[in-house]
Structures are given as C-alpha cells and as structure tokens.
Length: 267
Image 1 (cartoon, rainbow, N blue to C red):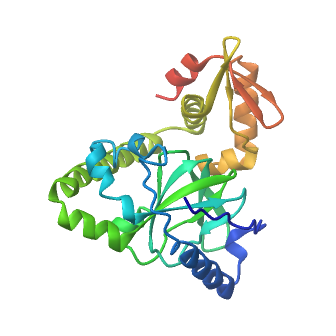
Image 2 (image 1 turned 180 degrees about the vertical axis):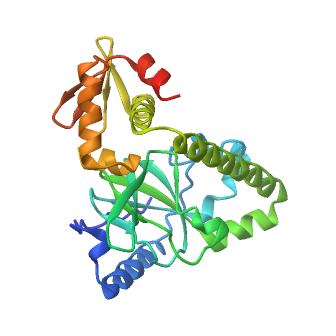
C-alpha cells in the first residue's frame, strides 16, 4: 500500500494565510490525492462503517468503493484544507483527530467540531461541492481516507441501492444536526458546559478508578469556542463545576467525577 506523509506546516493562524498560500495548499492537497494506493477503508481496517453514512452498507457494497479511496498521513497542526478552498471530495478520519474551524468576517476563528475516527470531513461535497465551508486541521498525527467526489457520484449513479441508503443516512444526519442545534439554542451557558463535558466523556473518556479522564487536551479558549461563550465564562463555569465536585482540573486535563450530574444538567 503506497501512502504519503504530509510535511508539518504548523500555521500559527490558519485564517491569516495569504490567498496565494491558500492556492498553494489546495494544489498540494490535490496533487497528493492523485496517488492511488488501491486501498479500501474496509480493507485497511479503518472505522468507516461506524459512521452513519456508511453503517448500513454491506461489505460487498463497500467493496465497490475500492478504487475510489486513497489514504494520506498528516502531522499534528497540518492543514488538511482551507475554508473557501476547492472541494475535490470528502475525507473519513481513519486515525487521530481533526478539528474544524470557522472564520468570522473580522478574522476571528471558532472551533466548531472535533472529529474522531470514523467521522466524515468535507460534507460540502454532497450539497455544494465547489468550496469547503470550513478549515480542517489535524489535531493529532492522523491518517485520512479520501474519496473523490466524481468517483463517489458515479458509484451512487450506477448503484441505486447504495444511493438510497446514503440518502437515508444523510437525512438522519441532518435531522440529528437540527435537533442538536435546537436543543443547544435553548440552553444557558451552564447547561451547555455540562452537555459538552458529558459528551466529551462519552467520546473521549477513559475510566480510571471510578472517574472518567478526558483523553483530550483543550485550552479554556478552545472550550469557550466550542460553546460560543467567552473565555472568562468558560473559566468561571469550570471552576464552579470543580467546586461542586463534578469535575477535577489539572492544567488542561479534565477528570469527570460525576457524569450523571453533568448529564442531568445538560439535558
């Protein structure tokens, strides 16, 4: 299997890159993706079937994607694609984690999502397909599987049964997103923080001596960005949760002591 490791660019601020740098990044990404290793997510043992978009497909149906998939390595802080850059297809996280960033008109960024193995990046492929709506950056050293949009659409055109399952899966994803946006919109800052910590404990938690350690290093600013609140509010809420005995804090490390209380508060 032929694979390529990306060189670490370590941009301090992705959104401050010059336009020519964005074009250079996009062209490099496109050239890297022309390397076909003939590997299929199913065959290279990634967790694509854990994603709802592909979870209903049989192994035989996944086999059809064999020639459409390429894999690439990215180092921590490597930029995978840039907001507004060309959108040649979508990615599936095979290993490591990826963060999605959104840039405001005044140049400020917000972390909008942290993606883990099995999740998709670049969903714009399905409804827009011309430009990426966000910036994606490797949170850890990671490996991604890429599916070129032309090949993807050819496959679903030739195989209606696959198209039907994917349409149903996308509808479920959209329904889930609307539900999440609706519920979060009704929460106050304290409830949002509880909901986030409980969700992170489910996705990144490691059980240790009756507690749950978050296997995820986030700064107070990053937590604030995920919730759409100020850094000062995030610090105050974390201290409050600590004083109430729901969590422990050791620098960037957060340990959940009472997930049940967080779940109840964040419902």
